[in-house]
Amino acid sequence: MKNDTLLVSKVILLGDRKAFNRLVEAYQSPVRRFFFHLTGGDEELSKDLAQDTFIKAWLHIGSFRSISTFSTWLYRVAYNTFYDYVRSRNLPAEVDIETLGNIHAAEGKDKDFGIDLTRALLLLRTDERTVVLLFYMEDKSVETIAGIMNIPLGTIKSHLSRGKKKLTEYFKSTEYNI
Image (cartoon, rainbow, N blue to C red):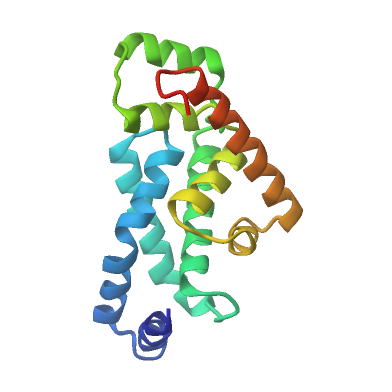
């Protein structure tokens, strides 16, 4: 957005914390939502990762060069923050279907679509899940996603196609029958 550029300029040139706070207010909910779905619905972890993202954004905002939008740059910071977290804890970035089944059995048959969507997203490989989240939930174009993830456009399109197919198959096998 045009307003983002002005706010970023104020932060870089003047160290304006109020301008940065306005950027945080504008992007805090979308970044938390992005992490919420990436982490399989872990709200506390999502808040922590969002906070880490904004701290990194504040510390490195001078590296923003307006080649892309601020939103794209911020999601790149968020994407890297998530993968830094996964690597630092030696966690698997992928959740297998058996683990997902155990989660489902432990929670019972909850009919809430939001919970089912979070569960379904765990069926996707991490890159597929990231692309699906950015495209469908954060309304990012495939070109923008390629910039955020720093991978070729064709790969983004493949991840999106495979992710959409897996989600469709999952929901066809549930009571939603889409």
